[in-house]
Every structure is written in C-alpha cells, then in structure tokens.
Length: 173
Length: 171
Image (cartoon, rainbow over all chains, first blue to last red; front, side):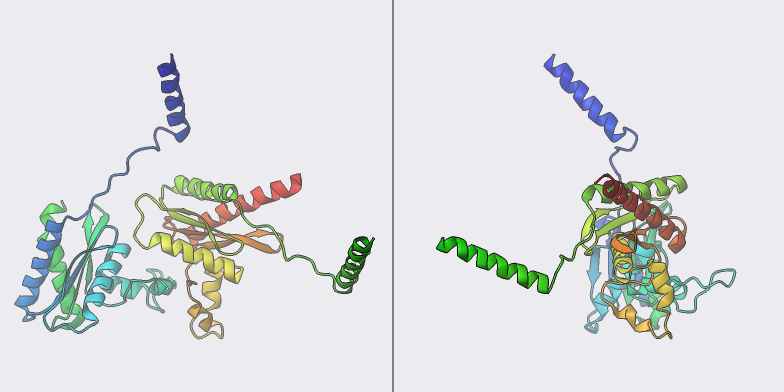
C-alpha cells in the first residue's frame, strides 16, 4: 500500500511537470577529434597559400575553447583574437565577415531598412573581423573555427577557417 | 521618577527633531520571486505561440537578478544579452529599443552607450507600476529579432506588473 501511494505521488508529480515538456535535453557537440581534424584542415589550406604559421582557435557548442594553437611567431594578441573570431561565428551562426556587414552602423536589410544590430558589437567575446566560421550540424551551430595571422589578412584567414570546417564536413551530414 | 523624566525628555526632544525635519523612508514596490516567475511564464507563452526558444532575465527594482532562464537551444551569448537588455531598461527607465534609438552615434546622447553593462539592442522592457520602475524583463532569442524580443519582454513585464497591482489592491 505504501508503495502504491508512493507511485501515485510520483505519477502526480510527473503530471504536474507536464510529461511532454519534461524530457532530457540532448545536444550535439564537436568532439576533440573533430576539433583536431578541423585544425589540420585549416593549417593545410593556409600552407597552400604560403602561410606556414597561423594561430587557430576552435570553440564548441557552448562557445568554450576546444582547441587553441598558437603560431610560433604569433603576436601577443593573436590567440585571443582567434578565439573571439571562433566564438563570434559560433554564437551568431554565421561567418564573421557576414556578421561584420550585418552589424555595421549603416547596415540595411533587403528592403533598404536600417537593421540596427550594431549593439551586438558591444557583447563581450565578440570581434568584428574576418576569419571566423561556424560549424553547423543540420542548422544547429555546434562550434566555430577562428584563424588569424595568415599572410593574406582577413580574407585568407576566412579561407583557412572554411577549409577547417570542410575537413569535418563528412561528419556534419 | 528620574528615569521617567529622562525618557520623557528624550521622547520630547526626538519628536521636536522629527517634526522639525520630517523624513520618510525611501520606499516603493519591488519584485518577488513569484512575480518574476509570472513574467517568465508570460514570455514562455509568447514564445510557444511562435515556436521560439528565447532566454529570459528578470531584474528587481535595484537591478538584482531575480530569475534567469536559459532557452533550451540558445546560443552562448543569449542569456548574458537578455540580462544586459533588462539592465538597460531598468537603468534608463525605457525600453532598450527606445534607448538604442535615443543614443544613436552622432546624437548628443551617444556617449550614454559607454555605460557599463548597458546595450543598445531591443528586448528589454521596464516593469512599471504607475510611473515607477520596479524591475525589468530582458528577452533574447525570439523569432522576430529585436521587435520580437521587445514584444516578448513586454508580455512578461505586463504580467509582473499585473501581479504586483493585484497584491496592492488586496492590501
């Protein structure tokens, strides 16, 4: 009898919570192995264009660092810059070059109306620079790649970050 | 007798002092946890209608966090952004989208944007009772961008204000 009433109490509690809403939240995230593969992809691409010494940051779904690799001759700011590029791409689910355009003071939408997203640049950990790409799994951003220090500047940084994401593309299907 | 007269003198003196400069407490309604929950539920109801998954922060009169609710699949910046929007609405006593427009670069108020923790983005709404700000709701991550976030936060602020007013009417 005691046991039965206990079960009834638990059932009642579950009912109160709303059975349909109370489910375990499952999240996809990048693994350490994926981060390393993406890193190698970025490095290989940058080598092709003559940049043998780049700084790379890879962040996970939560925006936390999964991998940091500092170039031999990196400037003191490079590591943090790469991390912020990766974070910005992850949290806004877009290339940092796109985010730069969308958050510019004079940015407008398709109809020419001001979009006023400049305030996003006030957020901590973001950076309005090219070289960050999101890692997207079925429309869900699960990480980001940030590259800095390549010889071709922001454009080349972005190409290397793109190659990093491409290196794990077969796992994002 | 001695003691009694002492007390009487002290009482008389304090009455004189108080009446010379009558001072009231600075007081006004703030927000309880239950009222913050009412705000969050209203935001959730707004989000459910459109099928979005926003993050919500509710602040009290003094800007303390009473409630923080992370959206299930929110981006890393959403919760912190919701807090800054609520903070902006609370401190400047207006919707953060109005503050954004009032502080545009090039305007005399532009330097207000340097206020730590404030953010010129829509989605923060003050909780008003009469002309008083008693708290604020910040929302980030609805479908409608800054306008949508503002509408969601407004639903939350209205619900909290209504809960406070119900209590005031009862007392």
